[in-house]
Image 1 (tube, rainbow, N blue to C red):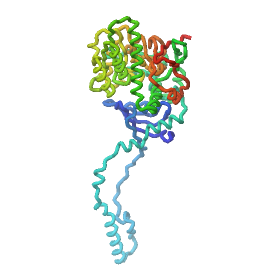
Image 2 (cartoon, rainbow, N blue to C red):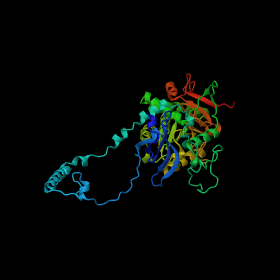
Image 3 (cartoon, one colour):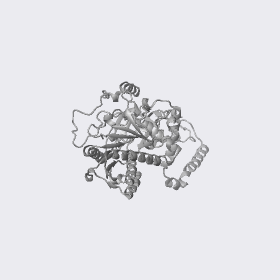
Length: 473
């Protein structure tokens, strides 16, 4: 089924508003990804940009159209022909005598044929005027969920060998700069293992995969602090895949995961406040306009319910909030939390909770400049205003796949990180994540098996919150 789509030209519209055109090169079933080659990117207000390879997630696709193959239309020269050549009923009369009866017969046939050919002029064409092009009908002809499900069942490619790795690695000259940074700065942040990417545009997909495998580092080993049991590290793509499997089991999984993650994180935060010996704790929670931000609002509700003074700062413009943030913001306000939209009104707090981006969102993917500056200001405020920071899921501004900051001056430096469901592959050192903790958000073991991770991901036992540590051995 999937091989029929390989080599087709498609036009894809993403939820972010970006449109791209390219040729289908590979379809990945395990992560629901489509890899295109010879891609042209169309950004709003900017000229088109070409790239050899580009990966697209299935959940990010808003509309997909097949581009029909183009044919070269060569102009034809119009010439004036004799009516006898165009009419098959007439025959050339040059050098042939014709009688009066034959001329009358030919004229009669020509008149009859003309009356038949002009019959279309009497037909009612109003039905064609009223009928409009049905975009939804044409979109339903391509069932994305069914196609990706078939690809996922048939493909056995390892996640680390996917071409979409090209989009997940930090790339040269693609780091968003802060307002005070010089555009022509000669020294630009580049990880040690990034290598020379100056010739990436001229590489074939197979050459790029071999280059990525050659310079990739082994994953860090993480164990539980209680009994030193090893924990499996998962990439953000694997996490998105297992969450998709959970939604197939229960349509209410996302709400349950938010409540489970929020309650487990609130328990750990209350334990940390108990160690700080604070009588009336004051907590600032910075949330983003995404799923991780909604989880931060759930944490705020639990902490207010346990007697804490909670101030929530939403790092986004009020008019662009998603529905989940709007709903949980209303709930948090009714329960007694204070909600702000700027860090200038924030005061000193005993603890700061980072719930801006998490592992699903990337700082480099923020297209709106105003939102990007708001997030950067919130990150800087958190780093310089408080000594104790707890990041939810993963520190904001750091790639959850590699553990490398997108910008060396704009990422959260937490003392503790609460992993949701499983630790991410970006957990490379305590300097990036601080102390590690793991919260059970209710992912069934069957869903882990469906994405190729067998056995217990984490030995929970009777605990819903487990302490983790980096294994130096």
